[in-house]
Length: 196
Image (cartoon, rainbow, N blue to C red):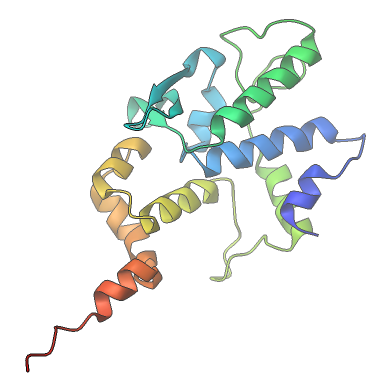
């Protein structure tokens, strides 16, 4: 069973928990938020910006370890946030409070941790441990985001600013993953044109 199949499994008991875990994984994996930032994220922290081509992108204003910053999210996050809001509206039969956290219990109190359910889902899907033998934790979603964006050629400066970290940290922890990238492999193995 894949992780996606597990999270979408239509069981009555735990269905809400799986739904929220699914959105947590999708949103953190495509935004680079820290788990503590996600825990405090409220509906009023959502805004939008546009790309140069005019496409709309969701922006989270987060407060965390490095102060306040804006996080521009990848494509798709706006849809998952809209679905999460739609679910919450139906659950409370009305509009969500701007001060309520995105990831909350039915009573509106913030979900403090997804660690247990995250590990349970990954274990069931057979991907709890990485190729390095280390157990994956919710923070792994931030690492996945950084590795993917870096391998897609996002500027290290822009990536560091969006993640609220330093260029040095990006290069130290995620740069080594990039050598296998086809663009990097091409650059690393190119040959000078032969002179006749």
